[in-house]
Image (cartoon, rainbow, N blue to C red; front, side):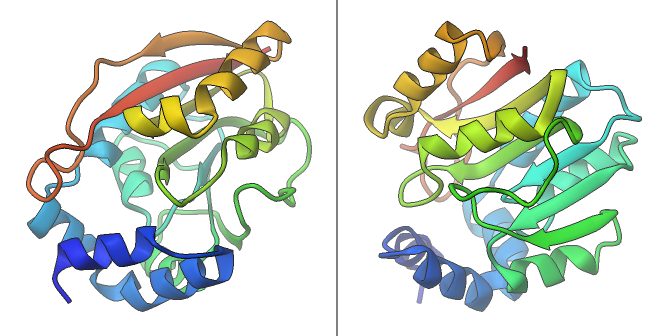
Length: 208
């Protein structure tokens, strides 16, 4: 299976169980595949915005952490209080071996998360708000577990933003006074080598 085929294979998962199983199977080659075949830059790009808005001593939930690519970037920037959360135990095992997280938890975006309200100073989400992955409704739980004044920083495919309910969810949370937009990046190519047609933006919101 080529790497482009593997991405399409993951995106075509019919349910959370199938998505989990396919990420488990991909886990060991995930980092090298994304770097060599796709030039995946969203972890670095999104981490820059976390570093801009979140104190280094803050607690950060890496939601949909996968193998810990975002955590590696944040660790290099001086973040230490990080929790990884992902639906795939295979991906989390790869992340565990990097020794950068205080905790690693198997949970599913879109379901109620097993964290306390106002537990984290920030959450970062990369590569999760895309086709066939976490629904827009999963943002509600992120708002719940991040403290008032904390930040939620995420990458989002531009087509997913318009077509999968994310714009409506983001607007409704702002209208309800639950968060406010701080910053949004220009559109960029997160996978310039493998899928140059795909565009992402980084969004930064502050929880009210």
